[in-house]
Length: 338
Image 1 (cartoon, rainbow, N blue to C red):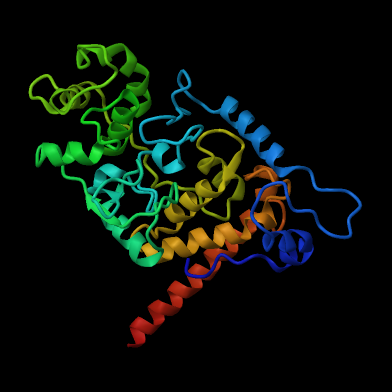
Image 2: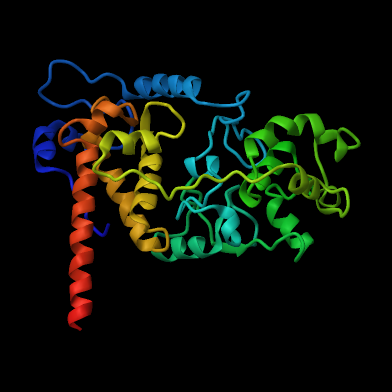
């Protein structure tokens, strides 16, 4: 898409208040435009209320979809990033299992956060953006590639053991399985409490490296044998000019709205820019910068009305598509002439 995700002129001109808000501190609920007799509705309350509705409306299975990573590598109240839900790298939004993964580490080669990315993307992220995780923004000193268990079980376990305790809890095991195996992780999350005691013989709430990687009888071997793959095919994406179909297609959780990371993910897959980390970051930055122009109710998400309205986000994406096609055609003509 290059720099093609432009804000339609009519929208930009009609949202001067939102433009001023964009340059104010990015703290929900604190901006109060001067010269208005009435304060803005507290955006924090709006976001929290909509988030509760969104959780309630999600298609889930016994609440596993919205499992909170409260302990063992997650922040209290943290919900899964859209890439984690789909078992994808948070940079390129391609399945994590397609490539070798990596984690972020500090100066002592200890993990700084609980997230997994493609090794290629993690290195590119550090070179282009800086030393921090794209999901949780935790700073780091570098990346460390995660070997496969059958290559180096000890190093694999060390890098998966976020807390350095020499053992893993249920939530840590689920996070690892979700990141490294192409299975239906929600079904596994539903079953895990029922089968956990097979490997946690002492009932301590943890499993050891041996319990995980043992052959035969290890937890990883059990998962590989009993859980089938579950990856969605994204080859039949609706054309961006079919705005309603495009919106519905990418509203995969059925919440009725698209959040920033969902829009970034949709754009990356729609325009096929998964391999260019710098381009990916440009798209992410543009979405972040123009979001306030289209999120008219400050809900944190773009609902179908905000997406479909004239000069809304849908039209901005169509304009981006047209500009992208022109850019590609120009590049093709130059190549032919050269």
